[in-house]
Image 1 (spheres, helix red, strand yellow):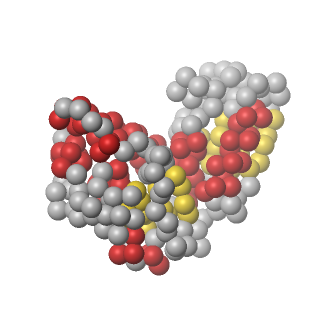
Image 2: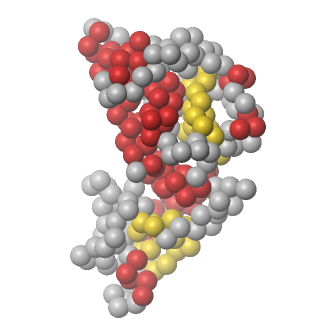
Image 3: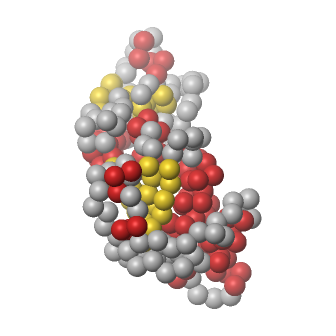
Length: 234
């Protein structure tokens, strides 16, 4: 059975972002792990035991750990910023939930299984903890784009032997996490029982122009996925 994490939101009484943070956290939780509930704690007294868990308002803790891995704050009852914003992006919350849930079979999907999902598979295989199996597939598989191979080779990951695969080629019973990567296109359907998450990314293969311009588009996709994996896997 998938682990159901504890999820806590800590805010100050007059935090202007408390309601938005609670709505965001409940929305993401419902999408990723519907069996979990969000507990909201309002902390007014800096001497209260819960104040030690408030690293600025709002603070999100999953299984007792801070969303960003912080340990302390100089002014715990002040407003908190997440990369300059008052709320964390949804994908960062998803990453923390996934870290707590620890799924063992990951499947990345896009239409052609040629670029985004292949880059995700390569990164995941390099960064995943032991015991995790990783696949990628598409609803209309074609071929692995050479630019995807090239931008991963730049960071020491070899996917030159990868091939595009159809969703039906994947052993559905072994998959407990599906991440779709489609942007404007309609994402493939996966009929197995699994947690489903959507990371919408523009298709780098659709970029027109010179070879360097196209390669830069693939690098942006690689780096966006790498950032998400780093938040998830540490």
